[in-house]
Image 1 (cartoon, protein in one colour):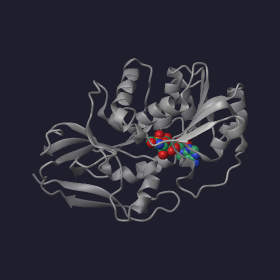
Image 2 (cartoon, rainbow, N blue to C red):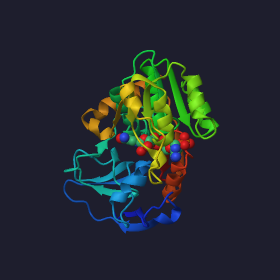
Image 3 (spheres, rainbow, N blue to C red):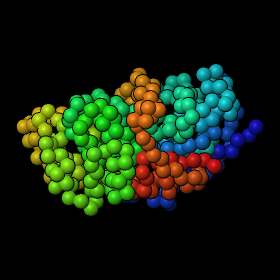
Image 4 (cartoon, protein in one colour):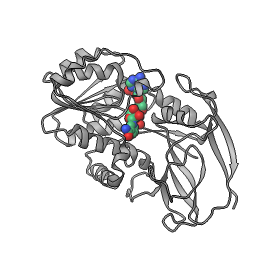
Length: 332
Ligand SMILES: NC(=O)c1ccc[n+]([C@@H]2O[C@H](COP(=O)([O-])OP(=O)(O)OC[C@H]3O[C@@H](n4cnc5c(N)ncnc54)[C@H](OP(=O)(O)O)[C@@H]3O)[C@@H](O)[C@H]2O)c1
């Protein structure tokens, strides 16, 4: 069988916000697979903020980077049998050939059994996204019973899970920052105690009202001025997990008003992370998030765009805040 893959090329260097013209759709006839390889067809593809900055390490003309859930159609690798569904970092392409030998980070794997839940969760709450929230909260924020946690980018894929894990771990107050009233309303539905619309509300004032006793944990997805404002209201020995800085991905970093003395006076700990630090505990994170979903303690949402041809628009839309929960593209 001959397979014709479609693939999206990073065709023009990004300048500011990504634009449709920055991408080009190409076709490729897939070669025969060799010993150790498998060929898989994409079912769900992920569009993520990191793509905006990580692709800059690749030359223009490269296939766009990204993870996907795919079905193995042909295999010469017994760990990836025909019919299995896998997670793989195959890029924006409909058919991929992979030889897992030698891949260290973002290694492909056969999806664990999610029961009746959608396989798409493998690029969301039961994959990199859920694990970023799980390990970032538990290992870096280390919330204690009765504490107050703030999450920025709260209605997105990682943030919505991070805040709920804060509640599961006993925070008496979890406050989310998000960009629309609809997102704020959803955050309250899924158990956040408060939600602040950072685009229309005065974050400093609203945060003082929502967290009169100060903030103990901050799960930061956005960086910039919002984060400096949250840091001002942190308590002594507060912990900040820096998951991402999306407010600066499209632009050069801007100088923010940030009284750095608070790090000393309040003895704050701020630590950035890559979720791949916990590759050896990857399936522990997925198992625990799955259990919490099954027990009704963890809610998730997906914003699904249909059609591989819509990858660039889904990506651009996500970067602008068009998604609630995980942004996904479904191949029809
Ligand atoms: N460290 C890691 O290993 C790791 C792993 C996964 C993700 N991340 C990071 O985690 C963050 C969230 O990723 P995600 O996949 O969950 O994406 P997401 O939150 O689902 O989607 C991105 C969201 O960012 C918000 N946003 C866009 N521009 C913004 C701005 N200027 N200021 C504030 N918010 C802005 C938008 O929501 P609003 O409508 O609320 O603005 C948008 O919906 C990103 O920074 C990403 O790079 C890190």
